[in-house]
Length: 214
Image (cartoon, rainbow, N blue to C red; front, side, top):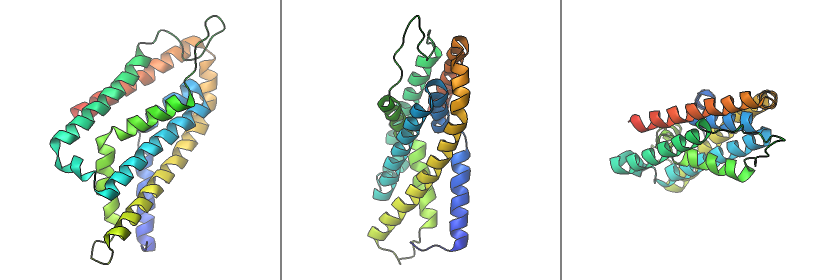
């Protein structure tokens, strides 16, 4: 696709700012990194990015427009997504054990697949992500009749992939910074327990916020 250097610069700056803004995705990734390590953090990040790709494809195909035009569809997805965030947060908030196994009582670690799956669901079930891509991406695609439907679809997917790619790089940076701190904190069972609960409380509050906002 063709965009001026100024348009590309504006687009990339917007990508950086939007991906740096704290939200459910980043908090979830940090919670998994600090609680379970770098590998699980990357699995969570890939899950979030996969969920974002679903929204990009939905926007490109026009499916996301259903959420923008149907209050019922938007509310259903919103409440399911909010409920999932609250459920994940509550599991951590009311846990009685540290997230790390101890010699006295071994505990199964969160698997890569579980972290990936959680990341996908957190992103897919957030209707605001769908509306973001639906509103943001078309601003950088010409709609003056010079592009046909196939070209608009490809441009939408390309721009969405760039947004996701920028997010993946930023999330990787946060994971690399957080992982050593997580290793240090998890060596203390009490700290690990309260760290898990703190992130659980954040996820619950984000779920409640999602449910209560329009």
